Image 1 (spheres, one colour):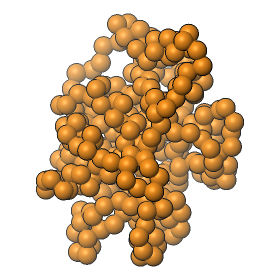
Image 2 (cartoon, helix red, strand yellow; image 1 turned 90 degrees about the vertical axis):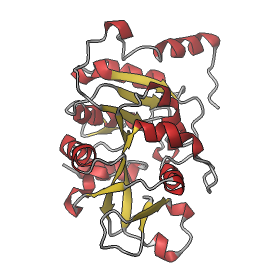
Image 3 (tube, rainbow, N blue to C red; image 1 turned 30 degrees about the vertical axis):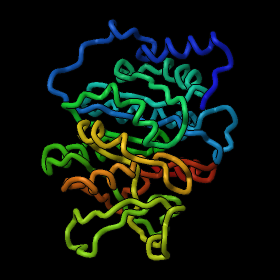
Image 4 (spheres, rainbow, N blue to C red; image 1 turned 120 degrees about the vertical axis):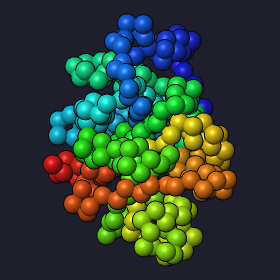
Length: 290
């Protein structure tokens, strides 16, 4: 559980989370009619492996610009109503200060949401749930993927919402070395593109076959908000990390209903776009990707 250093800092943070990025809610420009999409960017995780001190990982720079700014530049090209940025109490002030200096038009849509207890991606999205319109969809992204492009995200959203008309979708990739990525397991009938079984994190793999699976979860998801409202509260932390994985929501849905999960597999040449930065070495790799 995050503990604020003083009552004054607590009040400052509480005030901040009732505002857009420096713009009071009532002063925000009106949104365009017809957008059925909200976006959540997960940026509350602790950056222990990055060894970047007090600086949150998402503020580490790639090609001279903070990773989070790279992502917001791309997200700003996608039509959406709101963008919810999930942060923790220890780094919220630093993130707000950096983003307040940007001149991106998309900042008028950004709202910070506090994750008091950093207990996994599922717990992070749970914090946003009261803000999600049940009639809309939510695109969920990680804040440490600076090379994502709007074209990839936009096409994924279009496939899910317009072409396939599914309530859940995720992006996958084939990797020669799957590393720390979650593995996507499929049913035996691999000829069906949607024969999704489940996602298993590397540390939770039960066999060499699972560990050596080369199809990985990119960490980009689309959900109908009704699915999130119905099933997000049902996920548990019964895993080796003791965290609430957002990916567990797929298991909870499959237990209770027949609901298609669309897998949008990207071509190998686009794998650099889904590179997540968790270590200094991965930061160097992200720098090289253009």
